[in-house]
Length: 145
Image (tube, rainbow, N blue to C red; front, top):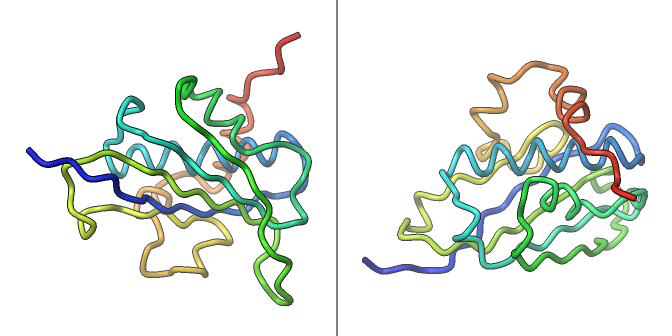
């Protein structure tokens, strides 16, 4: 069995620049990426998160830590401020060690980010309730002291 490190892309939008909205949107996106690809945490090599400059209330990588990705290398960065680009956008690139081919990878684009890659829009996301952001927000753990 041959393994390759494949990139799995995802993008979503946050309802607002608040800690809860950023974490809820990121968590929902990560959960869909895991579900659509049957990703096991131990097979994730690293993850890069990026946000548009209008999102700075929290690091989206915290959502991955809350999902238990404690031994995974995570990085957060801001994107360029390109005029007319999609606002309040969170993007992720998961480096995944897998036996799947690149053609078998399911990328996840949800909420406002569906317009970035409509051919890659998540089929599972379409089946989720319209208030999925609020549902994901309810599962965010409070910061530990």
